[in-house]
Image (cartoon, protein in one colour):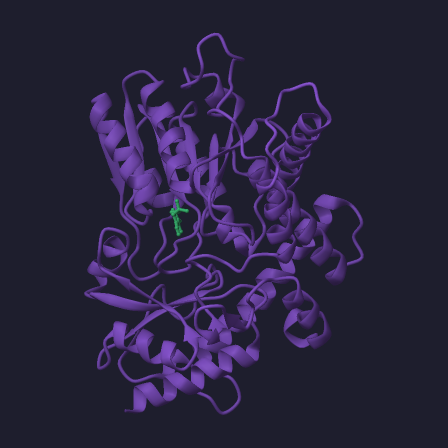
Length: 417
Ligand SMILES: Cc1ncc(COP(=O)(O)O)c(C=O)c1O
């Protein structure tokens, strides 16, 4: 268990940049992982190397051959990490941009019919689906989420599904509540009524919490943002099923069929993803006796989940003599206190202290969290709860119980004053 293995935790933390200190602020505890997780040192090194290389791919010289081999290796690593034996991976500008691209392709490339998505989604998928459904003249069906659990269920989709659904979108995990949805269950509910639907999944918030398994979801598109998965800013990763790639995708005329990549690729982005996969394998080897690469990744995912659960339980229910957030006066915990699908994140509001003040006071004590406001990003979650803002505490597996305890002590004072 990572929580109780201090030596391993030290080793893990040594693999990341700026773990305990911010170059702009100085010492700080990082609970803003849903805004961008810490970066692996190996990713920093790899980025520097590839940023310095002038060569393009596809030439007959040693550098170009090396770049092409790097991209090929990274794509194999992506297939391993996401457990996607078929389909293809490619990088784009960001998770949002790739979400728009996949959803646009599916909506514009299918015959007349319905598009379905849920109120729990981030605007990246929700806006894309509604925008392109509108332009295609396809009715948009909105599936309500349960505001108490912060979840949308397979039954909620099933209740409004029609056989005419051509495109469906699913949020894997919410960056506002931290609660995961049952992607395989929702996908099965969609296919039970519309077997041929193209199903898109936003995995951006889920990725750092481990345990992605595309083969088990029966979907057509999955998108992540690697800066939220220990890599760096500047690119997103998409996976597209073969049947999605067979739709009329935007690509160069007379170029290779089914090619989603737009222009010269950033080899460094691919290479840094290989670093992420090697890190998961390393972590898996520390917490299990597995040797098979996929089994190592799964072992790492399980350890990440257990550690994060221990930390979010401490945040919610307290640690030692420190009360948990759930015990504070006038508190609202988004998604509820007993939610088995919580992934490394607790978002809360107090009735007496505005969320922005809490975040400011924590910041002043070197504890970085984030305020979520009822704006176009989070209003869909906060407004139905009657909240104008909430404090998001987002963790990753390199966070420690001591860090959680520091936050709880600070929160006790803030709530008392
Ligand atoms: C679930 C989800 N979808 C979409 C996004 C947007 O990602 P990006 O800004 O990397 O495009 C985020 C960002 O945090 C997210 O958590």
